[in-house]
Image (tube, rainbow, N blue to C red; front, side, top):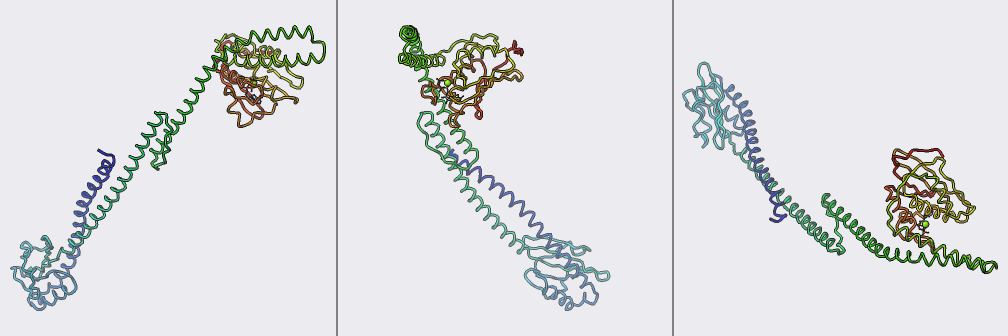
Length: 454
Ligand SMILES: Nc1ncnc2c1ncn2[C@@H]1O[C@H](COP(=O)(O)OP(=O)(O)OP(=O)(O)O)[C@@H](O)[C@H]1O
Ligand SMILES: [Mg+2]
């Protein structure tokens, strides 16, 4: 069954059931209320008439009785009003209408109370006229036609309103279901497009919270899929380029060290004159640059197993700094308190070396400071490396850990990517903040890690 037909049935059936039961309840209660109000009105009236007639002089004078009854009839809308003796003889003449032929209530003849009786379209109500010892009866007949008319009018109104309501809700439910069906068809096409790697057509909001939410979730899923696809593509490319680069850089190392050795020998032989010395320095710088790039590529590409051990952080930092050429304009301050960290010293040294090189580069020729500090909280050791350099442009800060991202002319853009890999292999994390440029390394404290004083 189609969704729209289901919707129609689900909407219309309850309305019909509700209207039906409402009509039955309403009419029963309403009719009773109307009749009760008529009866109470009649009771008051007939009691008054019975009292007016209850005078011996009137009771035997037909004309007097007729005058009183005509007076009532002139003021109240009744079908008929008649007075009877206790034998049932009619003692009023003026009301010999069709309605008067209807037999009056037998049980009311000797009744000392007011008696009611209903016909399909009238109420008969009789009250005793007590004159001395004898009891007569006054009988009034009211038409129920006006009540039935009111009920009929209301009935037509209620049916009309319920038909209009059913029509309106039917139309609304039809269009809503159409909207939902169309949306679901679009969504299924959307997911088919995603599955078949096509660009899915945009779907506009339907302003139904759950469906709009579904659309948003699918959009997010699509975006995530796109970014995973992109990452997969990149990682595939990197893995093939990585293999090639690893081989290439490895093969470059031997000729590079031979060139370096030969240049050193040539320097000893011919490096006395200033012009030649300058040439040798240029060759040296170029060799250093190639060596740095080869090392960067190898650090990034090689997945080396961790050789973990306990080592003093300060010792590790000092060893790293020894291998770096630091110009006099840069001051490095080491942590006041040493810590034992459980790590692969060579790999962590690569991390420090990359971060310090970057900081030196950022400080450039200005006077600057690289401040290295540590803190311990619960099971985590934090190492902060803060520099007073030019800072990282806001637009680049989210990209600096991506492989190959560099703003330097001779950079590989692999330094921070290697740092991230190494720290994450140690189960830690590395993050960056600006103003001042702060690289924060978090490592898990090993069991053997007791704080020591430097
Ligand atoms: N301390 C820093 N201050 C300012 N910018 C930095 C700092 N450290 C890194 N960067 C920015 O992050 C980029 C990426 O750094 P990363 O170490 O990965 O590569 P690189 O330094 O450019 O190249 P390589 O490390 O091969 O010399 C740098 O080019 C630089 O723009
Ligand atoms: Mg770098």
